[in-house]
Amino acid sequence: MGKLIRWTGGLACALCLIVLLAWGVSRALGPEHAHRQALERMQVPWDAPGSNAFDALWLMRYPVPEGELKAMTGRDMQRIHALPPATGGGHATDFASEAATRFADEFPGDDDLAMLCAPRDAASCLAKVASDVPAYEALVVRHGALLERHARLARHGHVRNRVPGRVDAPLPRFDTGRLALTRNALLFAKGEPGVALDATCRELDTWRRLGAQSDMLLASIAAITYSTDGNGVLLAAMLRDLPRDHALPASCTLALAPPRADSLSLCPAMRGEHAFTTGALRTMPQTWKEDASPLGRLLMPLLFNADKTVARMAMTPAHYCDADADSRRERDLPFDAVPSPAYGMVEFGCIDNAIGCILSSIAAPAYSGYQNRMLDHGERLRALATLVWLREQRDDTRPLAARIAARPAALKSPAREFGIGEDGRSLRIHNYESGPRGHWEIPLPDYLSEPVAD
Image (tube, rainbow, N blue to C red; front, side, top):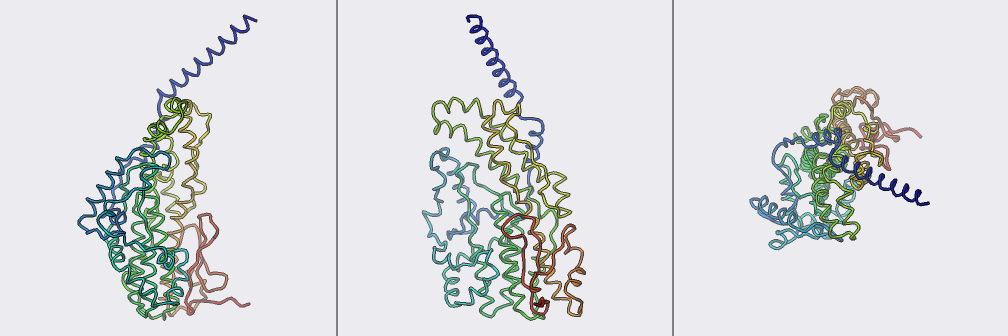
C-alpha cells in the first residue's frame, strides 16, 4: 500500500511538473505565427480620405459651435479614458458629454421619434408624411437647427472612431438620419419634387461615402442602411410617382455611380473593431481584479494572456483584409465559404490562455454576415442606377426583362442577376445576407411596370 501511495504521489507530482512546464513553454512562446501574421494585417495604418465626421456625430444633439467640436470631443474622450475600468454596471455607459453642461439637448423626444420614418419602412414614408403634412411641417421646423448640423456630415470624407476601447464605451447615435429621411419625404409631399430629389440623393451620397470609409462597424452598417435602404428606397418611391420626363438633379448622378469593389470592403471597419476590442481586452485584468473572487483573482494571470488573446482574435477579421477577400468582392461572391480559424480548446497555446481562447471562440462568429451586407449594398446601388437607366431608354419597347439584360456592364454583378418582382411592379435582387427576407425590392413606375396577369 505504501508503495502504491508513493507511486501515486510521484505520478501526481510528475503530472504537475509536466503541466507547469507546458504552461511555461506556452507562455514563453507567445502568440502563434499565424496569429501574429493576422495581427500585423489588422495593424496596417488606414489612409482615410477627407476630414473626420466623428466629432459632428458625437456632439450632433447639442448646438456646439463648429469651431469647438474637435476640442470638446477630445476632452470628452480624455475623460472617458480616465474613468476606472468597467465593473458591475460600468462607468462610461452613463457618461455625459461636457456639451450637456453648456448646451440644451436638441435631440427629438419620444413622441417626435415615433413620427420619424425608419430606413426599413422607407417604402411607406411618402404615404406616412402625406397623411398629415402640417404635423410633419411642424416637426421639421422644431428640429431645423438639428437638421442644419446633420447637413454638415456631407463635408466629411470618413468616420474614424475616437472613443477609447473599453467594454462599456459610449458611442455616437445616428438617429438624425431618420430626421433627414422624413424631411426629404415632406419636401416631396409639399410639391417640391426637384428639391426633394436633390436632398435625397445628397443624403444617399453622404451616407454611402461615410459607410465605405469608416473604422467603426456600427457607423458602416448604419450608413449603408440610411444610404440604400433608406434614401435609396425613398428615391425609387419618388420616381414611381413622377413623370418619366422629370429630370434628375446632378447630385443623383454622383450618388448612383456604380460601386467599386474597394468601396464595399469591410476591412477598415474590421481593423477599427479589432483596435477597439484590443483596448477593452487590455483592461480585463484590472476589471477582473476588482470584480472577481479571491480564487478568480489568482487564476486570472494564469489563464489569461492579453497579447495572445489580441493576436488570436485577429484571425477572424483578418479574413476581410486578405487577397482572397479582395477577389471575392471583385466577383461579388458571398463570404459564406470564407474559412474561419479553428478555435479548438485543445490547442497548446490555450494552456496559459484558456480564458482568452474561450473569448476568441465566442467572438469568432460575431461578424459573420456583415461583409455580405456590404455586398448587398453594392447590388442595391446597381439596382437603383438601373432604375434610372431604364427611365432614360424611352425609345426601347422591348420587354422589361430584355431591357434589364441590356443594361451597361457596370450595373451588372459578375455573380448574380436581379429581375422583376412577382407582381411585375418592382425590381428585385437576391440578398446574400441571411435574414427574414431573401430579397430586396424597389418599386417601378407604371410606365416601366409589366403587371402579371392573374
